[in-house]
Image 1 (cartoon, rainbow, N blue to C red):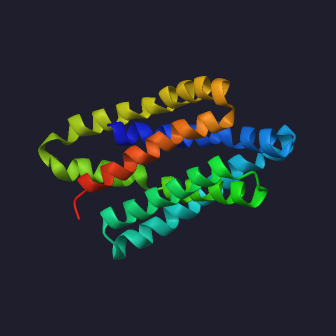
Image 2: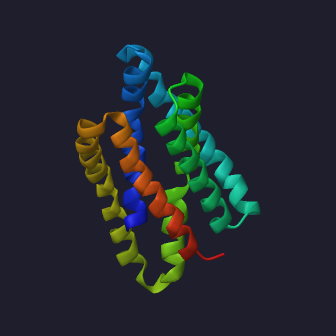
Length: 170
């Protein structure tokens, strides 16, 4: 449940924060910065397609770890750099990394208790409310510390997912 919450929070958070980061750090207009959202979805789409192939060859746990490490590297990049190439690369890494998180968590939950598939499905879908909690916390954090605060909130979600990796079956 918390993993799904983090996934959706990172997804919604990236969509709202990425253009703001470009505007704050690089002085872009909203029109110029809005490309960040498209970039995120381009790499999320690439991640979904490639994930369906990669998951045939690599364990879900290994691929989940790679995905989370991509997002962790992206959070570090967004926190430490003002270079446009690093910011764009970080946004792309979040898109790629976050693209298969929901499906892996959902399938692992169903595999752990197949007799409770209806209850698990309902609980996982309730995790979608992370898309409302994260932006709220990110708003408070960005008021206090600029967009770095919002990135820090997303980073907490990524760190949770990193620890969650240890719970996944090999």
